[in-house]
Image (tube, rainbow, N blue to C red; front, side):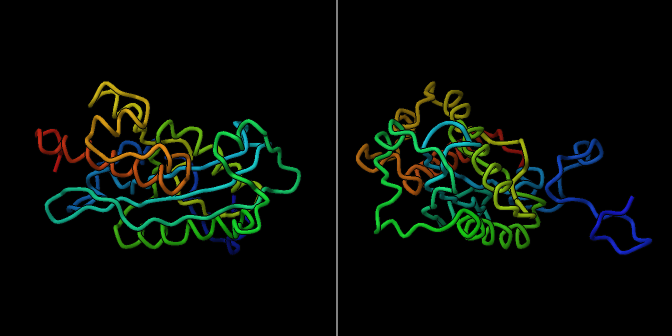
Length: 234
């Protein structure tokens, strides 16, 4: 059956946001080197969101930041350029007072320079799509500390805004809480950061940009240490 955008008689095109098929899951890793081979065609992108609650369908998305992960010629990964946005609460969004007190965010502060959800997501997604093309990766995979929370808010915002091309895998993620638990015996972000020898400031925490950048550092330290120990396939 043709999709509405397919010309008559043309086979339907594959939806790049659809879950992987059995054939894709069984496919070998991409040939050649680079980050596409290291993560089976996925581009790791660290994401953190700050929100006005825990329910992705009803509570406002207030901040989002993303850091793509790159790989050098020696096969070591490192954080790329941060992209971020302050986000306007969507119409009718719930704003939990306890969540706002925790993050310290005032959604209506005149100096926030917030953007509507659709514009904010496009600001995040466009550079990721460009890196996907250059790295020969098929799609991005969200990296986060307990990333199911972040992915749920991203997907809910995508649904509300009608964005057709979400570069992130729809359900697979890399969890730095799990990785840090394995590597350091720590699952709390601040403690894992300290165990990895990375500088941490409680005063700057709970901003999407700061948490994303520190989580990216943690992910890279763990992945590179694994390579040094001989565990990397490259």
